[in-house]
Each structure stands twice: as C-alpha cells, then as structure tokens.
Length: 343
Ligand code: AVI
Image (cartoon, rainbow, N blue to C red; front, side, top):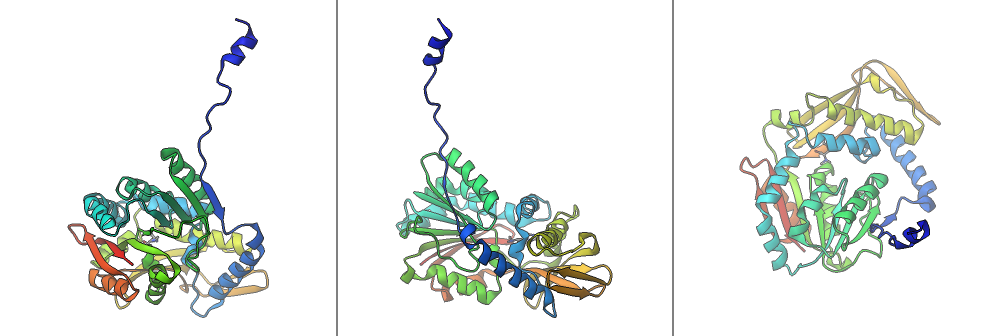
C-alpha cells in the first residue's frame, strides 16, 4: 500500500465534539457602559461612610476557583449537606416536577459556576434545554463545554450575565416550561427585600417565566457552626474575601495592598446573617483614579452578608413572592433546606 492509499483510507472527518451556544451579555458592545457602571458602583461603596463592596465582585476567575475550594472545606457544610438532600429527595423532586407537568423543562441554572450541581440533577430533571447563567464568563464557558461533552444531545445555551440586577434572559432561552434552579443558598446573599423582589420577578407569570423554582437555603443554627463555615482553619475563605481587593485593583486601577487587610466573619443574630468584612490592619489610604479613601486601623469594609432563614420564614417569603405549592426537604440536622415552589 502506497502512503497516499493509506491517507485516503483514514476517516475523512474526525467527528468534532459539540460546543454549546454561549451568549455573553457582558460583551464588547456594552463593555464601555459596563466598565463605567462598575467603576461607579465600586466608588460609591468605597466612599460610603460605612464602606461596603458588592459580593458579586468576588467572582473573578481566581475567586470562582477559591469558592470551589470553599465548598469542599470541612467547615463549609452547606454544599455537601445540600447535595445529600438532593440525593435523598430526588424521587420526591422528580414527583413534584411531574405533578407540575414539567417533564422535560428548560433548566435555568442561576450562578451555575462549574455546573456540578445541575449535572448531578440531570437524571432527575431531564431538561430539554439547559441554561447555565453566571457572571464569571470564562469559567462558565469552560464548564458549559464540559456539560455538553457529557450530554452531547442536550440543547445548552450558556449566558454570561449579572442576573442580580436584571433577570431578563436572551431570546434563545425558551419561554415555556422554565424551571429556575438556584442552589447553594445564594439567595441568602441578597438583602431580604431584594430577595423578595428577585423571587417576585421569577414568579411573575405575566413574563411567561418560571413554572417552578428549586431553591437551596441555609438555615439558622448555632453561631459556632455558622462562624466556622465562614472562617475556616486553612484560610481559604480569608483568601476568597481578600481576593475581592485584587479584583477591585484590576477593575478600578486601585492600589489595595492585600497584606494590609484582615478577614473577619461574624454572625449578626439580630439580622440573622453572617457578615464578612475586611479590616484595615493599620491606618492607610487607598487611591484610584480621581478618588482616595483613608481607613483607620480597625475600620472595616463590609464585603458580604449571608442571610440564614428558617423553613417558616422562607416559605412565607416564597408565598409572598407569588409562588404556591411550596414543598421542602431538609437534612437530619435541619441545617439546610431545599425548596420546590411552583408558580
Ligand atoms: C455563594 N454564597 C451562597 C456563599 C455563602 O455561603 O454565602 C458565598 C460564601 N462566602 C463565603 N463563603 C461562601
């Protein structure tokens, strides 16, 4: 056999792996506008009397990786507890979907990250369309590609966007039979009034949106367990918190020195929330184009609130938002709850 015969004997086209559609609503046309509004948002937070930074800025590429690491820490019980509930309650969850007539829904995965949670629920939810949504665009694009490799026939539309401000999804996302999936107690990172508005937006039938919501919520428990979950022995959560300053340096051309800040996590019982702060270790001044902010030693920047609910308070919130038929499942210690709510 000649070399040329051998060449023609080879398959002419090696089948290529399917790639998911990806829509980046943080794309170049809006980049200038977005950059301006990010700078305004950060400047406003940093120059407020009680300085605060929005937690969505944790999730640059390194921040998303650090968060992934947090989820496997011994102290950070929410992720594994929620996974245990999903596993134990999967027949009931499948039953709730069937009862709502959602046999092959469009699964909208809010804050999808590495898509691992939705992946484990694919056999239960059996979506026709999968829509992972995340602010961390590059991280999501890779993750969506991996889901597509595992489910080549699944219609996947990845969406890079900041859904905390506006939940309007692109036209490529089907309007009917939508199931929102919001696990990990991420709703706890909203102020309660914002959480209600967000849930209302999802439940709003006028927009032809959700038929159902599958929601994971961390529950109130003893302070020591809560605080350890946000101040782990390895210091991963501290790194996650401080990385926010690196991200602000990048976004705002600011000059935060990460070494001058200490991670603080505390449970505010009155407000039923874990608070994360960054505390200045000495008197210092942070500068960025057109601005500066002096901090005294001990002064803090509030970086995150993580509200903890009871089964009753979350059921009331879902009902107030317009959802009905609220069901919930918890773990034996009642540390975490998964809610199903139909709209
Ligand atoms: C994403 N979110 C639900 C996490 C939480 O528990 O509030 C973020 C986090 N912050 C520190 N550790 C984890």
